[in-house]
Length: 84
Image (cartoon, rainbow, N blue to C red; front, top):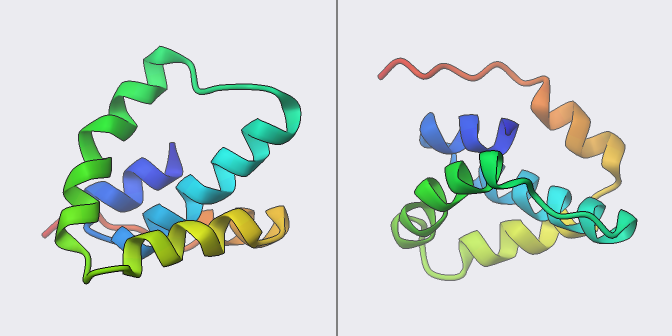
């Protein structure tokens, strides 16, 4: 959910990191995103990939998958403004 907020604010790298971290966490517990949240990710995922410099989105996603969960939580605590 926080990744979606970063995506809405145009912070593609931070969004990708959190999406990667959440994917790894869900895999580790055998879970998956509920449809009520998954559709939001789908609204932002492809536009974020397209608008990011080539390879940077995938690199950030991989970084998120590798980061300790405590770092992902710290990332969510950064201020995010949805105002342009």
